[in-house]
Length: 117
Image 1 (spheres, rainbow, N blue to C red):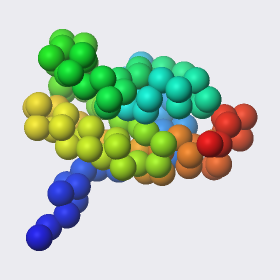
Image 2 (cartoon, rainbow, N blue to C red):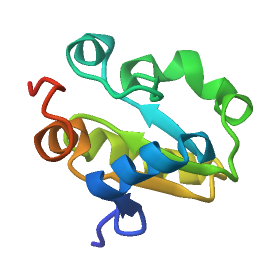
Image 3 (cartoon, rainbow, N blue to C red):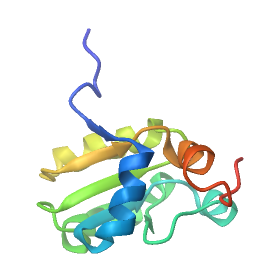
Image 4 (cartoon, rainbow, N blue to C red):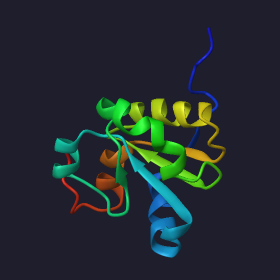
């Protein structure tokens, strides 16, 4: 049996921070955490699409986001975002990356003002 997520590209938090500082408009940012998690800790510019609300937002994903644009997906530690990356690729998104370590890694390594939970 092979790893389902082996084909998913990853981006580290240092690269994300650099991209946010230099060209934030060139990337689409999706946060799949639950609303109560986003209230505790968040990164500006990420659009929250909670996995638990998948039926509500999934039908319009291709009109809300450009399937050809670079898309970075984040969750708390990287597991839920990997699932979302796989789903996006199945929907025809061609430039998808999972944020390795999620917001937890971002707050620990990049921005200590973001609460850790």
